[in-house]
Image (cartoon, rainbow, N blue to C red; front, side, top):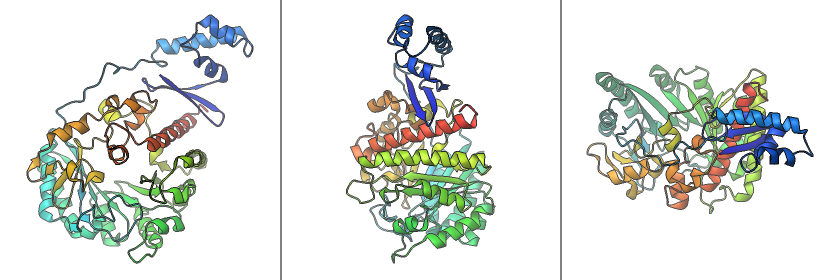
Length: 450
């Protein structure tokens, strides 16, 4: 299987199963359309009105060599099926420090932080039990992770600042190492908390949607006021200190800002270098959800963003745009490429009450409760369903050229739109494929091949 695509004047070919990417001329581009269906003589004859026969024959020789080297038209190494390892370990937890929030973001999947239930804060006892649970369930794995999440986790900073040193101490006793991350809307990100993140080498995900009008329209306070001015100041103060564990400015774009490339560039102009801006996932009954007719505009915006990012790189001001980060030199390990994030069996979410869910987006749906941090996992059948939700069990993924880049997409989105873990969210797939084309083009440009 191959995938051909053009970006501006550059023709590229992806060999799906080897991962090889080729920049080709128009002749090779034309030959590849019929390479497997016709004989060499038929190809030469069919292109005789456009190219001299000797040029076609030379190009065929080069293509044949790539095929022999396993770099073109490579067969699927797992066409007979794939069976994930059964002895997996839990590597990371999304620890909900607060089921409450001090903003009222209109697209919030968590119902303004409450996840369909009452407000609540994580207790120190449950937080410690979650850390102990992860250490116990991580087997021989040395590096483990916890992301403090919400709602707004900084509403419960007093517990977080006790859990972090507890986690490091417990990890050291067990011969492991913790990576802690905090996801915050920034309203409470004062100097004390900034220093705590720096002192404890914690990564941060900082929520900002872009230009002031865009951000304030979707992320208002409970009184309906904008939050842009306050959070941007805090984010700039924090990022200027060059946090050693890193950060991402994380935004969401909706149907109200289809020109989202301008929001990415606005963030860059504010001084942010590590940026993630993602499409909203929402039901069609909302005014900010994407419609199928929006796709051409969104595709064009991704191309516009790609050109902007390349111009900044040439100017010596590169931006690390999260969704364009792909590895063309082997990429992640095979299970990661086939199964994605590991939600439901390697990655779990923990509520303030200590209940376990496959990920934060399933929290509040009792059908997806896996157990508790104190009593352990009791729903092994559900865990196995998530383990088996890999691309070779998803009919729509098997024949998709981008399957090893997206790993089958988001389980939560598949369930939300199709009530089936094995049926990906179609519009999300279309946008993802475009992002991968843009990302491949950028890497080709960086390598000096276009």
